[in-house]
Amino acid sequence: MTAVYGEASWFCCGAAWGPCGSAGGGACGDCSSSRHQHAWPTVSAACTSITNPGACGVSLTQRGCGFVHYVTNLCNGKEVSSAIADCGPNTHLFCGEKTCCGSSCGTNRLIDLTASAFSAIAGLSNGLIPVKINTVA
Amino acid sequence: MTPQVDRRQFLTRAALGGVTIVGATALGSLAPEAAFGAAGPAVAPGGVDPAFAEGRITAIAGSMLLTAGSDGTLNRIQTTSGTSVWKLTPAGLGDVRIGDGLYARGVRMPDGSLAADALWVNIVSLDAHVVSLASDRVHLDHHGSRLVGHVVPNVSAAVYNGTPAVTDLSMVPVGGHVHVVGAWRPDTTEIDVSTVYAKV
Image 1 (cartoon, rainbow over the protein chains, first blue to last red):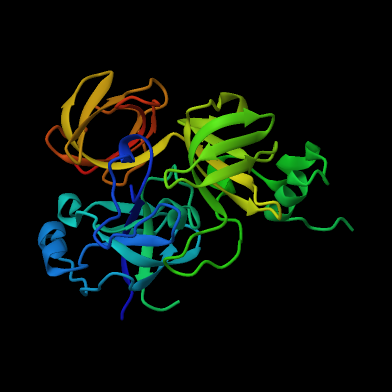
Image 2: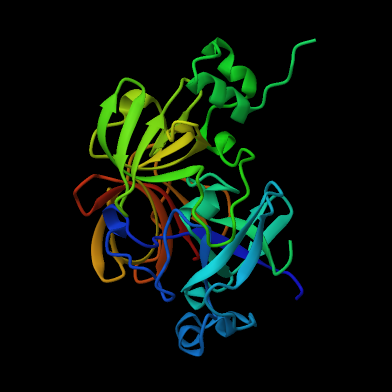
């Protein structure tokens, strides 16, 4: 696959506290903030109809639960591998949104990482980071 | 020649009591942004990260935090003067309270405790719908649950269209969707806003 570039955030996944207390196990049933997992906008046809990345002009391959992506933080080059565990983010709600580190930018919300996966490549207080998403390391 | 010690080695030694913390800042910034992601053991995709912990603080014993994970996991989190703490802003261990929620990243020690490199206390990262906006608060809908976001003077900021953060939140789009990073006020449906990411 050709790598895709976009924005990544981190999200409520699995049992948690505070406003995340109502988060469940995600579309795949086993999502947990302590695991290296992520949400992908096209995990199923039903998911795609909700997240609708096509509305932003983005075409993403449909990939199911457990599929592994390699996500690189364009701000520092750090990479984490994680497995699909949920449907999301709602890409169409943020069409055109862009995050940059210098001249390295990611446009459109394409992936939500768990807190453990995100914190392996960025501080959690960074809400959005530009990333490269690939299927190979 | 002085041997090089990276942040991970330093924290491990500090947790074991084998290093004086006087030189902590020689490692660079102690801000959370500088502390994340020190090289750790490889984690299989989908696997549990042993260098990470999540939960609510049930007890504080000196520099040790005892936490109950949301999945029932109990953790002992060892802090050192090299541990960076975020609680709405960069903070100190003295700002941490029983009942706070946290995410921690560090080094898993032989006794099972986690020597903390970074703590993010009460931090939340949410996609939300903006219901209403006032000068001192923003009302949010997060997956059908209402949430009050308090605007904290000189702290809360907005990032519009990826441009540098500003303290003026007046352009946050009412009726639109935003991403919010903030600090939960424990046992409430309220947060203090750190940053609102909005497309306007």
